[in-house]
Length: 372
Image (cartoon, rainbow, N blue to C red; front, side):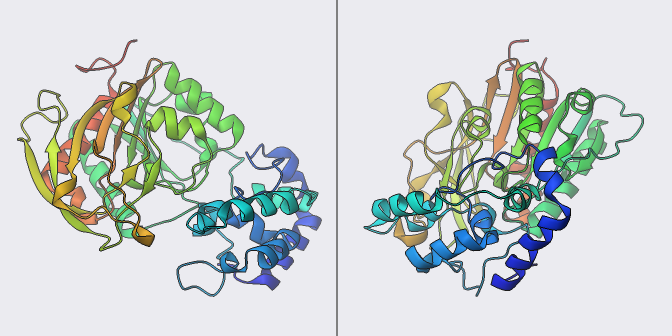
């Protein structure tokens, strides 16, 4: 990992010599966006001019809130999923600080080296896929620019490999975002995002994925794939997932809670009973996805655990879905917030929901499917 001020300066200066072309060639979302209070900390810390503004106006966030001495400036890093606004939001002067940061940061010119630095974490060249991908086929996508929990990712990959083998699916895995193009996506029935964190797709890759979904593709997301403090791609968070993550308990982080089966007649939850108890890192969202037509599969009994987040914020939702399906155009979206603890990929109830949710995303003809 690259740490500290001097390496950041060296990185930016080195980009002047060798990576300016990538700023033109990669259409990363932030390439031309002015700096502001909602710019990820990674971009701000990579630019000495922006970093100097942060250190002067908001010195409390010039270092990460997790005990590290410096922000980590090479993904995966929390700096890719936190912004000044998100870090300052609990302060009484947050609005004034945001405005001051917007004004001063917005005046900083984006040099070719800066643009290249902002685009360096995105992929331009597609991965080499197998010559033959027999259907049905599942693409497992695992690129992580933000928070990476290795045990979770490893357990998920192991579980999905077992499910694919039992179901007779072809499974292809990659962490290269350039796989999201029309030609590659057409070879698969569904894409699983395995605890993906941070912004990972360029504008053209986003567009290809969205078109593929809306024309009948399938999406499945596990836990961290819907759980960043900052998710800049609005369509992904609000349309494909259907809700924005707002936090998880920290008192303690992992708690036992009652999971209620909301839709026992659904093929994904059939035979699982009415409820079970399990320990997990329980996500809360800014809204219930039920409000705009999602079919809720599982909810949390909030009286069975303490939904109190960092800074003692109340994360109770009232109606608290943790797994659901939704239709996006002619496409299918299945999301489950379960999946931080590796043990839960083998827990019988959550394993059944994962397997059946994947099957639903893979096959548009399943009961409860989406219009074709």
